Length: 154
Image (cartoon, rainbow, N blue to C red; front, side):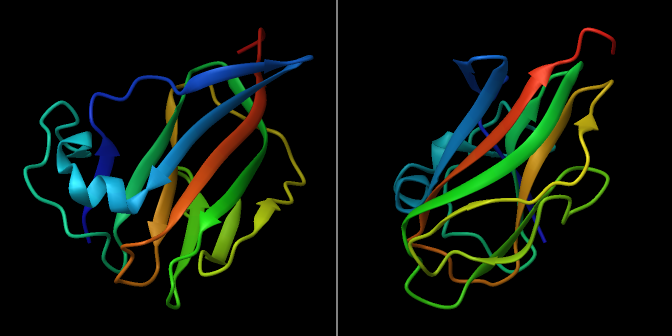
């Protein structure tokens, strides 16, 4: 099990919607394999990888940095290129690997919005992470989007 991060990642790009912020990160496995310097080990996020063959079973990618004071309303996944083989992911945070999605298949072109029942507010910075439940992920491209707002009371 390895933990990865986008090299040098700061807060994700925010898109302003009325009363809401959307943080977005594209996970493009063919590009990450071709250009491993875009990834780093989570323990040393400023040092680029020199080689990368894809995510293995139980590998985690810290996909989106959630800033302190941010409240998450929901998370969505938009698969634009299917894996081509059985592959599932979990989407969560440091408290729960399945905070938003559990065993979500990335082997089909699909858009899903995780069904959150409660608002999740963060007093300290955190990550939305993707856990790969199966190995062999080398073709999939998907977007992770976090919908929320800055919480002035945190």
